[in-house]
Image (cartoon, rainbow, N blue to C red; front, side, top):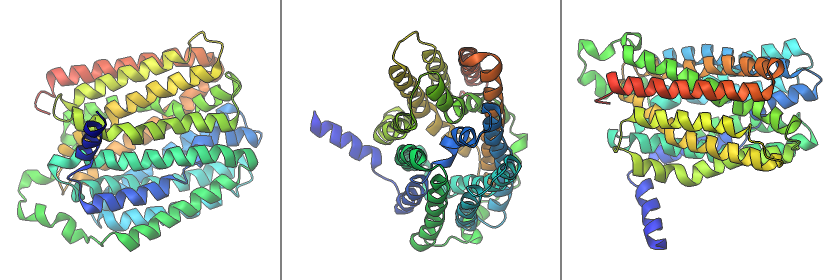
Length: 405
């Protein structure tokens, strides 16, 4: 039994290119310092701002991320993913440090906007890099490995962040800044440079007029984006309203909150690659997205469980959210990447990142507003309903548009 399990893990990680592994190391370094976003709402309350103002700051991060994703996608298709990745990491690290020095709400909002523009321009370039370094057969595996490194780093960062926040909230920004800068330098040192000509070299040889069709003309992709946005609006409650709910309603302190949130990344790091390896090719990607959305809805319903232990409620909800992530997000990446090519991949990755950034704006501000005006119980029922609506949309798309995907 043990040997079979070990062989399963070995198979799940086999076939990946060396550059994918190196890129995963870069992401692990960067995300191990990820602390600020998870504690931003609590940080704002620590400074004396309201829950709605905290949600507004996270929403402003999302607005900047929309612009960053657009710029990053455009530049990926014009100057190449390699340059955009390391510049985004270096500039993002500097902006994290600056954000921690901002004394007023207005200055925090402005700096958060600039930070997110730099930080989120990385995502389209990173997705294009993954697609470049992998083969079609290992695409979902490659995206899952990067997600593994991100979530493992997230688990380390958030757990450490809870401890750091209990000492001094301002230290969060220094750690996040230096790990981002360190990841950018490490990328330059260990990943061979890929010029823009090399990035599109293979595609240029096979180019035909349809190769560079705009992503905006792909109607199925646009419907997928709408559903992904709805799903992501719910998912982003994990970084805004759920930590506040854990502290104010479930009476958990920062260390417990950080530890529970860290479970998310650690479980994904241990299980997702094997899960993806077992599921890949058995069902259409859209089917897994639908199941993921159902699980997300169930997670929000769990937050309304009539249990006396706040710790148990929080643990159950995070476990179900984690199951939702593992079931859907790796296949979302493979789905949209499979619809693109080297000439328009920046468009697809940029629009997909913009959809998530837009959801961050709507989910963060809307979630905080609903928490204040309807109570957390009302918010969780609304979020569950939106998750189930997204699931219905994925099933619809699967039935009418996604049979061959």
